[in-house]
Length: 113
Length: 111
Image (cartoon, rainbow over all chains, first blue to last red; front, side):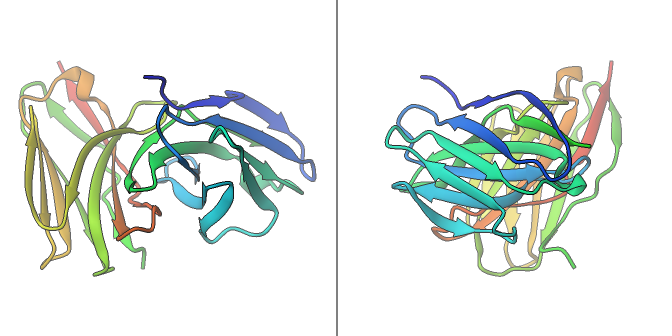
């Protein structure tokens, strides 16, 4: 059974740029959730995707957007990067019938300069 | 006030000690309660999952949920240096898929 994978592992961008992060869900899972984890804090829910549509969103502005593909992989896009967007971005996958049991990938560490 | 409160620690214990980690919450709609372990620069790893109130045991780990007090705990018996990590509690209301995390408690188990 393949676990959740994310790419890239690290990324450095400058303020105002755009970034795309990628996630491959665990085999057999059909939902993907994205979280932002600032240093020293717990992860914060950004949004969840199911059947290629957004299925719930946290308190994040519209410049955070996502996609889910037919193979259940997903992308997180962030436009107009701000310094406060520097964080570890985590992807988690689950089955829609058991959404609370989420398995996380290793994360992408984004630094905005 | 945050929906989920967790003492960030750090908590330092000798090897073999019993560790108690706790979270409190304010949202009575929470039905699902999870504990994750996160090593430095890694993603969170699901340790325990409990639905509603009660206890659940898995090896050296025991999770307790007291919904009347809005209080959850994770106990680690015979703690090992390899248990040194940040422990995150997480909660969710029914069928939302949105996990609300505590800040995490950093645990160090000294040999």
